[in-house]
Image (cartoon, rainbow, N blue to C red):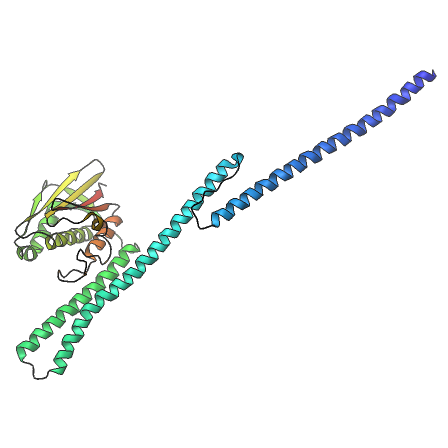
Length: 318
């Protein structure tokens, strides 16, 4: 009897200690897991913090995180690359803006100086003959017109660039449009005995803003005749695909160096290094053409090989 009672007391005490033991064990395991989780989260945030610090650094180094954080690493590297590209684009835009202001100031100063010079000459020479006075007034007026044209084109390209221009698209008879442009530009072409040949189907139509597209073609044709050899043709052809229509303008002229081709559509760019105005251009014609084409959802390209210069205007069919 005493043995059974002792066993019962031992059994009851053991059960009580067993419950305490298991409770302590569970609490210990929970605390260990919590500590592990806390350390893991701390390392996680430490890595993220390091990745963000690297993200803000202005270098090309890659952000490296642990293997389990590979997706986050990829996202951070993508963000860093995008931020770097945006920064470079912003810096490039700022440089181009400064260049634009510099070129505008340079190009405005030239005709303005001429206007002031000729008007000053008229004021300082009261005894000037009537013929000389008329001649100087005519030259000053031409320079003033050129200055007015330049300022107007500068504001126009600014409006295109900021997408403030709305298109009024409709189906256009492309052949008829180019025939009209050919007739309008006839005096310009006859100066060097150049001509335009339309080498495509007369029934070709295109969906675009007629007034603005005519401006594109006019600027390209004026550029073509300026840099064409005398007594040569400017050939206009069309290439159709399922989704696009390409209008090609080819003229014979001195081959343009490859390093200059990409600059043809820059504002105020002229092929002559001295940036003189012998051709009467403002350096904005092709830049305006590019903005109009982009507004139509198309592209404009140029290439020059073996004394053949080709401008391609590629527009969506619909």
